[in-house]
Length: 336
Ligand code: ATP
Ligand code: LTN
Image 1 (spheres, rainbow, N blue to C red):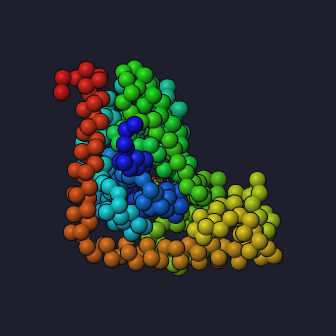
Image 2: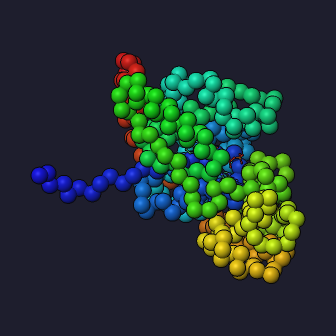
Image 3: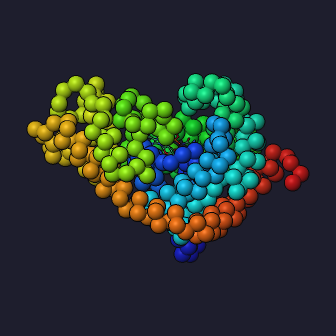
């Protein structure tokens, strides 16, 4: 019998966030907090999707600044370059190369069904560019280059990960097993954090009305003010219900931050009103973000360290990406 003493390969995780603006509490509870928790158990690749970012027009100076800031914020929330590969997508050219190839294995009809494309093209009617349409092929390339087993994202990205699975299976069936077929992974709570002003819409960094969005850089005063003004529903009980999107969202946020279950929360606030609960949620969020904001301020002072981190991460990512791309190119029939 074979004496296999080698430890089994850790399962691989990949996820990315766009560098279009500062992260929100939705990004944090829906994705980033979970990314941090996965670092010990999995081999993790995390990146800023700055190629995706230009599907919406960016001002160059702002864009450069945002990329630096959100990279620092990824480290401030707890992504550790010693434990994961924390890179910037545009520094690894294989993403764009594989995306082109995958474009040719994805149908127009499939891309037309993507709800993010429908939403964003409605919001940016003056710039419905081809990149916005083929965005999911680039995202599939991001995932498939690393043969990721799991893709931890918020609920809004589920459809894109499913398309990446379909593309992977299609390619594997046409040629031979090439890509790992990835699975979507959601965190315990907060996979879908809604706007505080319109709890039927997701909390977004690109909302015109920022009073519904908590940014990770908001001051404690701003955070408390936004929670106190949060839209709630008719009634006064702190209890989840089908027709209660406002209170459901606040309970989800409180649960995501404190780790308490819905039952515990409902018990804790029995007999109390919306006002008390909003204050408690605001305070819990302020307390959760305090150490993150302190670390962020500290990292912002050390630009050379940040640059060093992303420059060291890019070749580590590229070493994996290059191997997959070469394999794909050989199977398709390229001479390279
Ligand atoms: P925009 O707000 O402009 O639509 P975005 O915040 O959705 O952009 P990213 O920064 O790429 O775009 O998102 C990073 C991660 O955060 C993704 O996994 C996404 O699913 C998750 N996420 C974003 N918004 C929310 C939300 N409101 N609730 C839960 N998860 C979210
Ligand atoms: N499309 C995602 C960001 C993203 C991503 C990825 C997420 C780009 N590439 C690969 C997971 C895996 C978004 O808009 N949030």
